[in-house]
Length: 412
Ligand SMILES: NC(=O)c1ccc[n+]([C@@H]2O[C@H](COP(=O)([O-])OP(=O)(O)OC[C@H]3O[C@@H](n4cnc5c(N)ncnc54)[C@H](OP(=O)(O)O)[C@@H]3O)[C@@H](O)[C@H]2O)c1
Image (cartoon, rainbow, N blue to C red):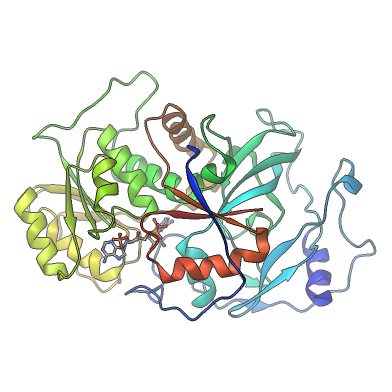
């Protein structure tokens, strides 16, 4: 892949229970979920058509060097999106340089896979230009720190959550460069593989609840809270999704009564994590599900989170209160044409805030504390062996769905 290599040279101056599988690189055709990603209206989505940049002249040296012992570093292998819907595995795109003294470089040990990873490539969004590197969450070892970094040192084991606009932060590569405030220590009870799912599902659930849906974030000294028959409701449509599993637990810890919509197959997961009510969706229309939800909660749901798609986002709007103020986070897209009742505030969850606002680190710290204390469990992890070579095939697995509440993580 010499041309890509040249381009990159210029660009880059468990909880221990998990199952392990090995995939071949055999992506098969797959369908998108009901709503796919075609209505590109969500927080971290860039709907611009990416351009392919002209290939500049190579640098005189083959790749930039890290400040310490470059020869000791293996090549920076990357799975790049080389062109529309086209991946390429590049053996060495060059080791990244620190752009700021407040950055760190992390060597990838495990990378979490998320629906956005395949959606952005299939539907061509969140790709500022080609080639690009996707991948939003990972865990690994710090190999370099900028001079202004106080709390991290080389050798620390960390996880991070990244913003798609930085190619250096794309997690489908061996060395990932991120602002230090976005790199958090692994919870002591988690493997790197389990920690690799904190960056998207875990942190999104935490920030959505604590920052956007007005759910109190527990502090180390908060007393235990239990829901009562008078506690406010939170509706989570997609309660067995990885994000839903974290959200159920965080809401329950805050004393909310969770109503989760899941398939019958995964209903036990939502129940085990604390959902007060689980409404199963099999062979039921959304209208029937809304009726079942209203039989439980009447007209009193004041918070809702949709993790499935635009038709279920609309169904959530029919399930929530018609008279009280409601906060609603449609995380899996909602058409801009939907008429939102006046009592409902639709929250645009912008996970880029975590990267752009150092103060948002407190949400990640709160999540680490709860996981480390055993108060929040990560979803069951399906570890895929084989490194960046198998990411493309593993994303096909995600696209097909039917993961039964498991989270796919690739070991690098
Ligand atoms: N920054 C952001 O805005 C952000 C961050 C995180 C996630 N998201 C979005 O949130 C969604 C969920 O992501 P994830 O990674 O948590 O998902 P995931 O772990 O891949 O899970 C998807 C789940 O959806 C459930 N599901 C499918 N159709 C359903 C339906 N009609 N009703 C109820 N549940 C249904 C399936 O469970 P059952 O079949 O067992 O019901 C499946 O487990 C995705 O669209 C993702 O892009 C957005």
